[in-house]
Length: 125
Image 1 (cartoon, helix red, strand yellow):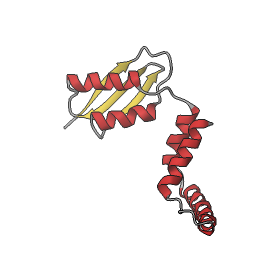
Image 2 (image 1 turned 120 degrees about the vertical axis):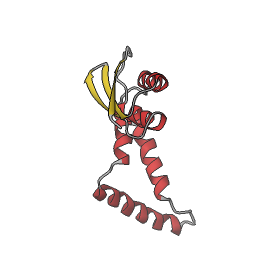
Image 3 (image 1 turned 180 degrees about the vertical axis):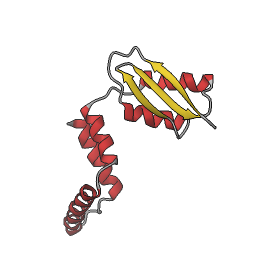
Image 4 (image 1 turned 60 degrees about the vertical axis):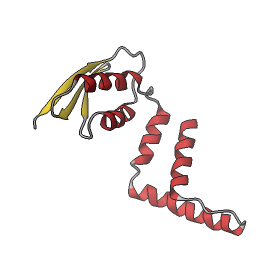
């Protein structure tokens, strides 16, 4: 099956958070969707196989309704792709805090709770 391309333009006045848009394109259209940004408002999307009219409309809607790009969203996305050393550091600190929590009869924090807390904090900065 050959790759097919779709050029999308948007009239939005704020830049889209493209990491969020890509996640939605892959969830709603196809797991292999990729894109290249041609200019501030024009994108070239690629996937295997032909684009259906429904997929084209979905792709446009995702672009037009994606959250606005922000430093907070960038930080949240970056947390998903932390290098191993940063993950290790965060987990060592969490282990140390869990020792202290145990001394006060508090339940330990899990890795999932740590990641959620970090993303929530990044959203407030």
